[in-house]
Length: 238
Image 1 (cartoon, helix red, strand yellow):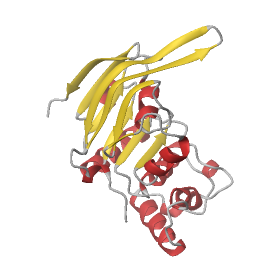
Image 2: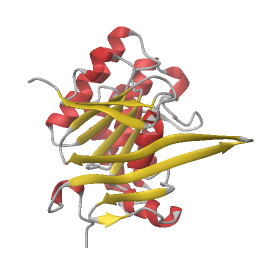
Image 3: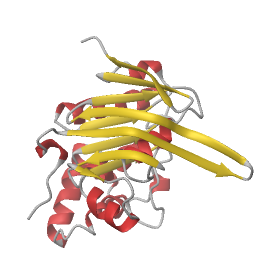
Image 4: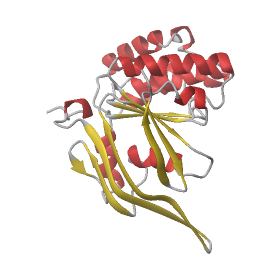
């Protein structure tokens, strides 16, 4: 039986309840998240903002189940996943959550098409279907003509398009983007933002960390963090 997606849940949302996370570095203990309470509905476009070190990336990693809370609850797909092991979390997020990173994280030894296909190789998708889905996604993102190139042969904007294709090829219900325009010039950054808006309009939940007020303003909701706490949680004017 196919797994239930976020958009198919009865409540269709993520929920953090009193989530705390600390890190120990030598004798210094840093609180990254401090009693976070947050609900995100399926289909929302949420921007997470705040100064460096305020907990933005930690919160994004928590939502993507790349990190686990020290205390509190995280409800995903109707289950409290706080305290789950890595293998179980990996199984849960597979095909449900897509990630876009500032550094692209493409594998230089693989072609563009092979980088995107990686997202499908652990999902029991037959090889022919994998190739068809990869080709369709590269075409949608405007980089089909670069399918056989290596990442280093692409511009920064093209690499980010490939990274987005890799994140979307499994049709995830939720897309998490950590500073997706941070390594791009203005024109390419604006193009990535246009793509994210379209992805959200198509029904995917988008949660983005950004330092850019202009880019945050394009989301439907903005969270501003300070010292590991949510200082502002505001809907954007239509």
